[in-house]
Length: 278
Length: 325
Image 1: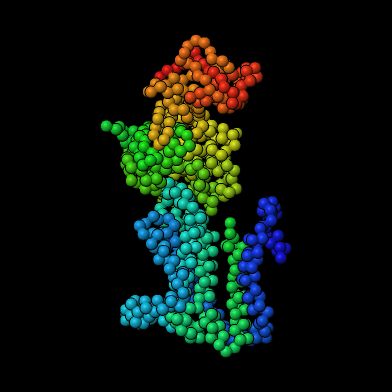
Image 2 (image 1 turned 90 degrees about the horizontal axis):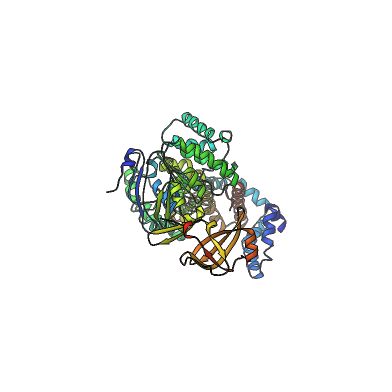
């Protein structure tokens, strides 16, 4: 089990850590239990899946539609999170405006909200008779619920807090000293933002987006509450799995495994480039 | 009334107050190099930040005829060489130096030409393509100085520019910097904790302590007649304050004995040796005797008298060896 990690960790660091003595059992034991708790359900799921049903599920048009919709909506939500979230994260990290702490607290609320409640809240705001939804429908003829845009809206609502808070951490970690240096050289805040702040915080920003994308990919509660479950329009992978769960166990396992593979694939693909923790 | 004429004529005139940290009045003419010396926590970096507009400060500031009071750092034309350099790690040395001209609207090609010229002048033209992470401490400091000067500032702030450099590198850079500052028409404020910087580079020395300027004058004057213990230590003098009067004497003028000396009642002190270390051909003793005093004795005397830390000794100085001011 230590074989894989021994390759990843440079030798001198490993020795330095070991030189402080063996980790105490009182810390080692819970840590091992935590790993088992996280890994064992995934392993059992892989073991329990029938390979033939996996092939059938992968070839089914309903799965292809749901997977594609999940991918599209998550990506769209991530782009919106970048466009809206980065400026907000920058405001929170760099501008000392009155009420900053309050704004940060408000931003975090959807993070701790049960997703189903988030769906209900979205309906009161953007539903067809919602406070904002009704005038929107009256003026443009467009309503969010039960559309793909509604899915994106729900995804943004649940993912944005993670993205903003994580990006703010990344911007703070990059430090404001370089911003000060840029200012003394005559750079406007916008130029400094583009040429200095963002490039230096890029790893943190990218990690925040990956986090947001993953959160969005798994979004279920708010989506199904706000948008229902229409194949090809609002049926994402998690909602499809939820529906199948009631009938076909083999198919559900196969679908879940596909989700697992996609998630792990993204994590591995991005790990080396962006998710390197200091 | 405060005289702001240097600020109007091209120099610097500033009264800056940061509550609890800084309360100074500073004036300098074009071409002046003001060395700011003082112990840690004296407010040196706060002064630099306030002059650059990075630290909000009450008061007034004039530079090259322009009123900088309340003006943001972007519009001040104040160049800063930060203690930690702060070269943008994502840009090459050339791009770092070109950043200032670019930010002020100079075209990309012209900015790069200016940057190349400044890198050449600082002797690091060959490193233009390197990232800051690939530069040594001395090279990075040269690039940082080039970056500050390329933005054509009316005031150049250097915050401990030789700190953290190897002794030899610092010495070479000090000589070069003296050359650049001699040709620079703006005002330079150089924060340093090194007496050599103050004596070799500065036209004026300003002694900062507890956020206030304790002494301002030509380097020779400040070195000969220090008014703070910090500067006295920097230049290797003993200074005793008596109200508004100061009495200074050199460590070599101090006689050390194990028993109370005869003669003049005034200039003798009893105390404990704090440290003994080689200093040139002599041994320098630090003695705590009410005041902290330093005395230079011969290695032979050190052995004969057994002058080691912890030993109680008497120090005495002839009245004729003391400068009073």
